[in-house]
Every structure is written in structure tokens, then in C-alpha cells.
Length: 154
Image (cartoon, rainbow, N blue to C red):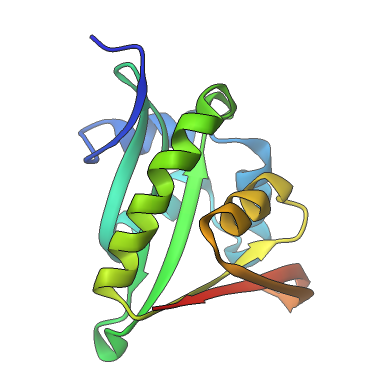
């Protein structure tokens, strides 16, 4: 068993594990956007994704991310990331590996776009690191909280 973090395929039990231990900032974001609880939000995200990955520290899944796809608009993808607090333990390694995954998203979809809760500073920093343009906050979601739209073009 390795102790190095890595990006891998989603395995059985990963969704349930991340849902159970999800970061508070991610829980708040999915609630503000969709009034969704962690498990259904993750299940829908995985199901709607053209690509999805687990983030591992050893054998433990500490996060899930991917890109949602609309079959009617295949050129457009919606990146997402939901994780446990343990993602902070491997942030440098994950940052390096995630750029390659974002490139794979762009290989599949020429335009990437989604929304991030302005309170979710960790996710905003990740998006900026990956090269996304993050726009000023505006009301979004069922609660009308301030979210920032983000995008990247091929």
C-alpha cells in the first residue's frame, strides 16, 4: 500500500465515504446551490459526469472530482470537486496531479464552466491554480447566495 496521494478511478464505497466525511465548505456549497445532501449530490455528480476520479491518500478516498456533461451540448463540461478535510494533507501533490486531469477535461469538452460558492475559498484557490478564470460573485442557487462563475476554454 502506498502512502502517496494519487488520482485514481472511482471505486465501490468511495461515494459513501466522501459523503460521510465531506468538508463543511462543500456541504454548505451543495446545500446553498441545490438544497442537496452530500450522498445524493455525489451520486448525481458521478452519474452525470463524462469523466470522474477519486483522490486517494493511501487506500482511503479523500475526495471525488470530475466533469459533468450535457449530452445536448457535448462541447460544454461542468467541473466539480467534493472532498473530505484530509484533502488538505495532500494539497501540493493533488495540485500537481489535478492540472493533468483538467487537461483531460478540456480534451473531452472545449469549454468548462460551473459555479463555486464565494465562501469556499479552498476550491476557488484550486480553480485559479488550475488556470480557470473566476468571475466576481453574484446570486446563484436555490438560496440566492453569492457564487462565482468560473470557466476555461480550450
